[in-house]
Image (cartoon, rainbow, N blue to C red; front, side, top):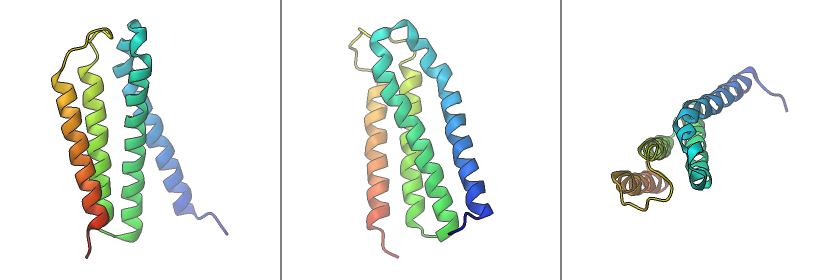
Length: 128
């Protein structure tokens, strides 16, 4: 089994996407360092953001190789998840950790999760 140049190119691309998404999200979570009770919560959202970007990139690469339209629905789902995670982290930048207020970010996050799940399910059950 050989490792082709195209696969190596995709591997480098995936690594660069993950590193770039981590670097982009560092300024977003850096304001939470003043609130130690936020560390785990923001780490979960950070991991979700990086994972969603990684999976979005993987589905785009898979679509380019296979041209299966279902991959576009999965890509849309993962893109929605990454935008939702990013929006949530940006909204929570100036919120102290001990404040238990319902914010617009939480509603947007719930709506984003619903859209992501719907797109992903549609991609799974889509027949053509």
